[in-house]
Length: 588
Ligand code: ARG
Image: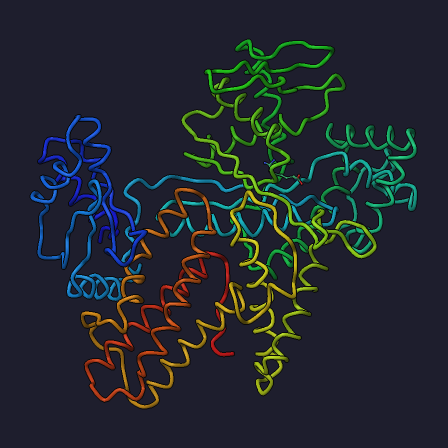
């Protein structure tokens, strides 16, 4: 089934065409004046201007051409040439019945599916995740789900930072503490121990110590650089040690991402692109793209069109031959295009890396490495504390993801106690609800702003059970479930959706919108539109439920129709929340 706005736009587009004008003038939108009509078509003004005609006359001839007509309860002309549109209740009911009978709730799969890689998460091995990584995980997960739902073949890749200087730092720091480990002995010929010499707790101590030392001590820094270069050149002991660092980190990352409901199809990282780099650099040299500049090799990035600005070249190979962040990203694009057949790669990364991606993308396009693949950097803003500055711990350090999740869980427990939710449930179930409410509220708070805006981390506000929060929406969904359960207990089942009356028209009309909302959010890579939709659904439902006393209604057909609306509303709300990465409890 075509989305409603697309269907109506096609009808009006045809009407414009028959009047001798372009069909694009037929775009239909939700009415800004609900008192005048449910939808509007405003194209007559622009069409008339282009054709140097009277807009009202144009609108009238368009109106005369509208077909089919029987789905409209009212078509009227207003002002200089606006067309107000109201559908018949029969037509609305018919749409809803079709949506309710469809596993995809009436959302058509895209006719042009693409292979899309979403690069998000981006945690760094051995370093704790911070807020930027949290936002990337939350936003990336939602965008992945939305695009997958619209019918694309989507792969999420965590793209771990597992190959940088922090590795050399860890190696030298560990050597300082335990110089006798076989990994440091160049004479040792293996095999190396299978058991990791470090735990995640060790790594969490080693890294800050190493990083502080490297900052204040140039010799320590030099040693770290040296160790990084040796690792990257393939020194066996260092490679064996590195594998342990990565293994230990990944186990923890899986747990942390898992507790957020964030999962990846691919656990690749910067290191996976390294084998690709030598040949790629050779190819670039051979094709004349590599240029010597102050001992390094760079790719110049002249603007390809007037809309492009001047940007510095991409450093391909440093003077010491070490791997660069940009080179790694370039090689990763090559892999994704050649081995994953990517048509499109989306990077959900902090806005602060904008220049980096501008350089990488331009280099990938200019050199042909991107092939036909489209590259997009989906930026996001920072999460601030209530003081308006990037969120910090009480002690002033950067907040770790784990602590942050803990903060929100604590708040969820308190709010649930205040609201007397789940007190009588078994412990395990209550804990699950706390997790869903805490994580869901955090995600909703993050996603409900457009991703490019900054927002304030305020757990107390996020977990409130009233207002525009994740907690409220989960509660609303659970309430719908409970209504359906109560009805079933009394032997009442959802029936056929009848043409809405004044009491349920607002909800019914809203329920025709899901396909358009999903498409809108997908096209803009902007989950916030779905946050808005979920909230509108919950609010409209609540007004409907105040007016329509479902379980006391004696007219069987009407009661069945209302229950079917509850069911459709619940299904839409659940689907929308799932696309945001939220989980809905069975009861609360
Ligand atoms: N690990 C990087 C960081 O912490 C983020 C990686 C983003 N993705 C990429 N392909 N560069 O900043």
